[in-house]
Length: 307
Image 1 (tube, one colour):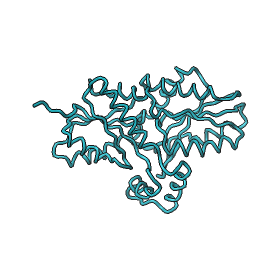
Image 2 (cartoon, rainbow, N blue to C red):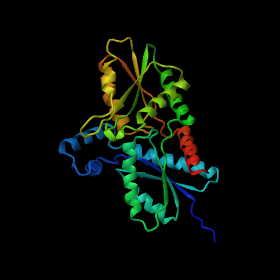
Image 3 (cartoon, rainbow, N blue to C red):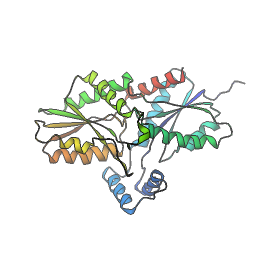
Image 4 (spheres, one colour):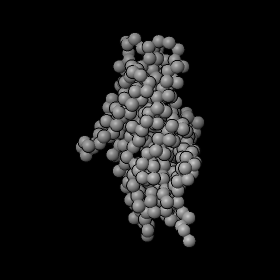
């Protein structure tokens, strides 16, 4: 009798977000590992989540993306089962891999939802995956997507949202601040192509929008000490003083889904900084459940699966 299980499993992976305020302390403990969060850190994150409605939409958006992607594979009758997994909130990576193993699927592709590849972040995902696989009697064959920042559907979807946002701006000179998550600068990261891929992402978007006055800044620096990629968004905003600019449009090229870093860092913190300078704040919509994002993931996955 022919095996009825899917031929492949695709895991959409993200860091994950809080489902409720009550989850803050265990969530931070998973992030900070051996360094337990201080009361001040817990209080700070609690306040941020309260300001965005008490939870992150990231998990729900990722699950919806997985459902759309599953429908796309089913439409072509391709035997791929799509899963989600998060590093810091359920379903955790180990639990998702156990579910895949129980179905007897032998080929697994991990797809980090971030378009660009940060070597540091990839290594952290790989560590958790390796730990989970080591506990399995018959672990599946595993491979990792290295990013989809150059995919034309991704770039077109981003460009369409930028043009939509620009169309709503009420006159005056506008500058775009493209943003992505900062990561720690370390000696072993010399070969990391993260910064190069971010530059190419911006260039790819501008290919479809036409040239627009723009800057780039890194956002959402974490709790760990040491140097992080610069310039920070805050520093970039400061450079706008005394310039003939009326509007500032924020475009996140590193986050494709709404999360704390979008809804708090950009929509609240950076908005205040911009408006305190007498400028108007705008933000391009996140791709979220945009069909072009789903098509970008679908195309990249098929290419890697060779199906």
